[in-house]
Image 1: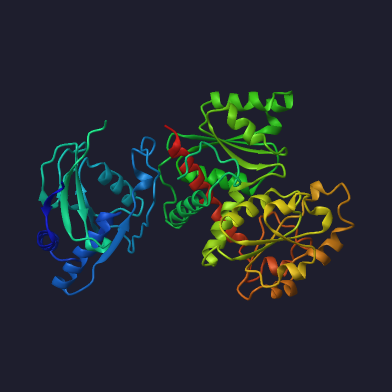
Image 2: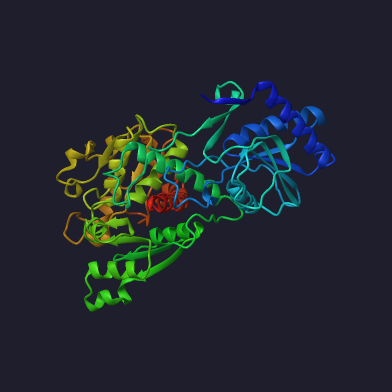
Length: 180
Length: 306
């Protein structure tokens, strides 16, 4: 049975807090750009953008980033890669880019995302916002904004389900079945 | 969804595999529009081209595709190699493999050479044109081009005009288009029609005006002058008159029809300059799409390896 870690209200609160923190840390949203990592991060970046826009009463550039071509496990991954859209709508050079992802785990996706991002320009700064930090980092990467820290065991899995995918908003912890 | 080591032809691919390659290619199309047109997935991999027949666009396009994926590209030029000293193609391929190549692109005047090599080497073999058999990446880039102009392949009318019997481009396109549900008509003089054409699931026309009528896509093929020594045609002028694509003939097709040519063009033989350079021509777009498709093929084959 999956264990529910966050419900719809808690997700909303976490994202609202992250939005405020982003604005506070950067003293407004001038030269700020949100980039969601495909796929969960894209939906969350959109939500953060709409909260930020309602607070600041103006629009913020929001992009999407696919990291498939930059992964370091391409030659080992068994699954066939499905590449999704990358769309960076503005120049990121000299801007502060807030990368948004759903779950921060080993940090390898973020490494790939930073490489991918730098191919589009030289940002003044890259910050990282995640809904869940579950630990087990394999690279020296730390998030700037965290929805919730959840200590997990390596074999567990965090699932983020969102309304945009016609599901109820919630975050659950699933224990992986042991291989037989 | 795409599990094989090699890309030998379209004939063995499923519609799902074709769509998967096209989807991946359209992402590479976006990469090619960026300022930095290079991505890292094939870093440290080596692609070797082994072309026994002349080629400009296929080889250049593959070379660019490999480099855009951060692979190393080496051109094995047959005319200055040990092949002229009598080395067999098997030994040449094994030598290339021992040099550390991960992919070999092969073009040969005999059908089946890539298939033969794929059984001998562990490298990924990519067919870049084998005799009159197949030229899979050309068909894939044609599909990618059609896809960006037309909603769906289902029910699409595609007229292929030219030397069907000698054309590997036609063969691969016929396999690909019929698999995806398009209606394919082939138009050519009886002397240039392959004997087994009825097995390909196409409609056969000998009159171009009937064959082009209401088509969504006009695909004209290069008349392979180097293979015309056997007297299949009375003269090139007559061919242009009877089978060349000119302005009036394009008008018989649908208003929004596109005109395609795999290149290199013989202007005034299979296509009039006014059509080749006209508003309905997507010929240069095909060339651009070639890089994206070849990136997708290299990328997907590269991921299959353990």
